[in-house]
Length: 84
Image (cartoon, rainbow, N blue to C red; front, side, top):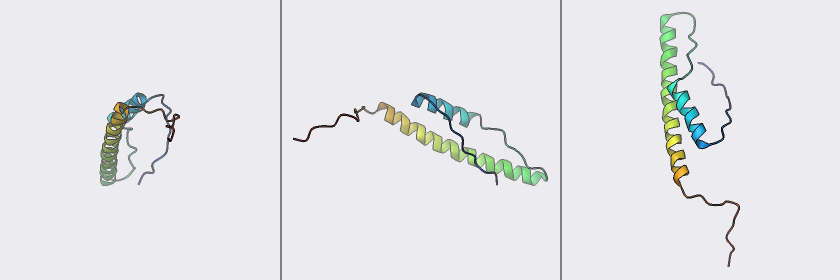
């Protein structure tokens, strides 16, 4: 099994983050196929396709949540209401 490596990306807005994740899902990196039998290659492609499908589903759910957050009324987190 291939290991998942951590990378980081800095964005300035939710819109930029959404665009980044949409691009990652639309154009996943090319798989590194193991040398050897055709069966090993097919199994690796299947594992990668399964991972990409699960990842895309999670990204879709996150983007839907982010869209909801973006439409929610904003509260100034620094202001606190006085207790009377």
